[in-house]
Image (cartoon, rainbow, N blue to C red; front, side):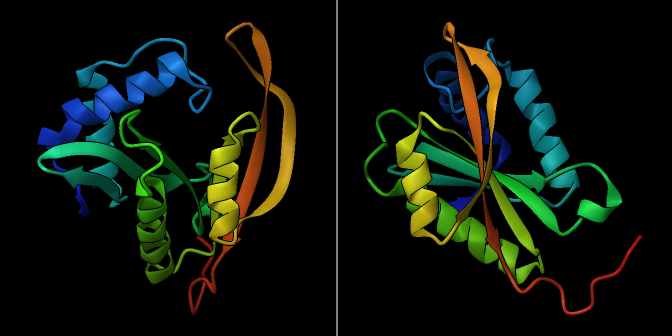
Length: 170
């Protein structure tokens, strides 16, 4: 089941996120995050009315997804960048697809124009997932990061929506 996250989910969200930090190139961080950092992150998401979704089954969180502002300048207010993380035990079960579909529905309903995904090019499963939902490749920044003793290339994919009926500046 997909639902809005609550503060009690943050421990499981943290476990999933820290696993991604330590064992994948899905996150370009080196060090694990703390529960205090996740609480601050969550409070910021709630203050900005940005969704934080969890996929829960039998009382356990197997994945989470969110989005936030693509860039912090006013003209980017109709563009968002999203993140999806699935636990190692939840991979291959369609959880990422369900979370992405829900994020797409929310973004579309809220009048977002463009949803962006930054994906490490060594993650073909994530690229395939996004292409399945209609995301198109927008460009790749070569050597954007360095982790696990190698240079990492970051591909950007985007999905466009109709956007707001009456977009405004400012």
